[in-house]
Amino acid sequence: MPVIKISFSDEDFQIIKNLAAADRISVQDYIRKIVLPNMNTIFTPEEAEKRAVGKFKKGDKPFTLSDIYGSDWYSMKRGISGVFGRRFYDYVTAGSEYIEFAGMENNIAHYKIK
Image (cartoon, rainbow, N blue to C red):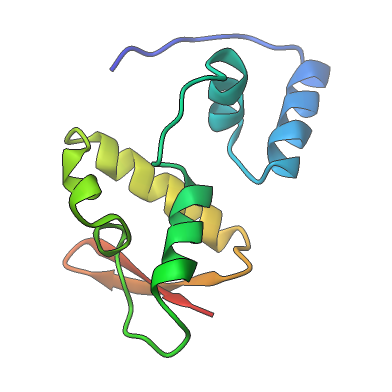
């Protein structure tokens, strides 16, 4: 996967950071959203949260990202799933209103509905 390096002034970076925070996404995801506005992916923390809330309820056993996405999960390229898993974990632990981290099992993160 190609990596692009870009520099911002401290002031500009703070603006971008605030805009990303307002959307509850990472700076990297915010820049992707601006640069590739027509790129429609189902693999965003917000989409995963929406799917989880529609699929699970409070009191259900903990679930994983692959439980949320089903067969769509296995269409993702290897390596990308780990990056997305980290993004979802960061999203949830930063204060998801609906989902909480439930622990790790066999190096796979589990979540539950609050």
